[in-house]
Length: 547
Image (cartoon, rainbow, N blue to C red):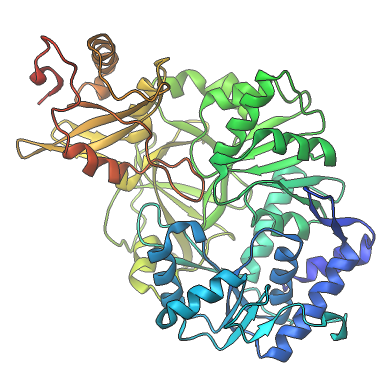
């Protein structure tokens, strides 16, 4: 079934219900208006030359028409291509060149970039702008009322290509993930079951693409007052006002958003009575964030689904479950509990490898390895990147498994525990060191905001180091603080090999979620500063090196 058929069905059932709402001024489309507007746009796109299967690059800011345009393309059978503009201009341009879009629908600024960097956009045939700017062949809103208000969604098979969504490139080059209509439908179904979502609920998506799922369920989706490319910079007062004004029941997005909102609410004695579910994804969530919302949600809970662009969702747990059952193990470095597999998904822990594999080599029970998943949400591969597809997929007994690139283990109750990205592990003479496991010990220090495991080379040997961001952002290593770090280091066997500590004013994080730490870049930074982060005084620099 074409994923757009869901909008047609919802509009038939609830024509006067608000669909997408702009929180700032409370303007909205009903589902009937959404349906008719997407039909007019589908007719317009077809008349302008967009055909089924045509890769259509979409650069539209969150607005009432973002989802309308996307579903219009789905109805037409075209393939929206979504690239995170926050990945930086070089990565963005290279992604555009790699995917070779045939059509472009965007805000005016992108058309100016297209003209200035024309070689990257040479494949684009149809040029449509949301603003009147030079260089765009067509203006989207020119007398849209002349277009027919009906457009039956193109009948497609479940394996028909529906969209190409690019990864952020946080731990490698950005890659275009292939989404079929079957995968989008499967994701909508499982998300609806996971959170008991229906047309009576209201969504506020901190990550704009999440609205595509909730609208397909018949939920009202409220566009928050924030820049989705900078979630850590959101104004929590505005988010709280948006939630209260619209009776929002369900929110989703980066932990960077909800940590700010939770802290603001606690500091100002605010509770969010309508809110039932705070869903945080993109990186492990600190227990303190769950604890904040225990004070904020009188009838709700926090949730941390695990997944990736290539397969989501994979597993799910709640904040209340973490705080009641898993927190002691998390603080001892067992990892971050990310819950049990969602319905329809199978999990395996396989031997860690940096090369393509053609068989599932399973780990022993409880052993740490790479997380592999199989199920209807597993995407088939990357757009015209056969080597990258080969690295991440394993075909076993006719079933396609995806290698998540994450390390973890399953406990005796089949809870999945996350220990960090595979590329962030440090293999040394003292063993393999995992980022989440090791950092958990130091993150409990009251003066540490966050820290990162890094890979160092000392005397031709690989050793683990630790880069720390303090709450006060100080980069001066005092003797007293250094001694406390040494005591923490020596408190656990797996932290004892740490070779040196560094202080960093603000650890670099990913652009999409503003929370994933760039440990690879920090390793390069720390290597250049070996021996320079030690306290002044009688302590020998050799005290921080452990060989």
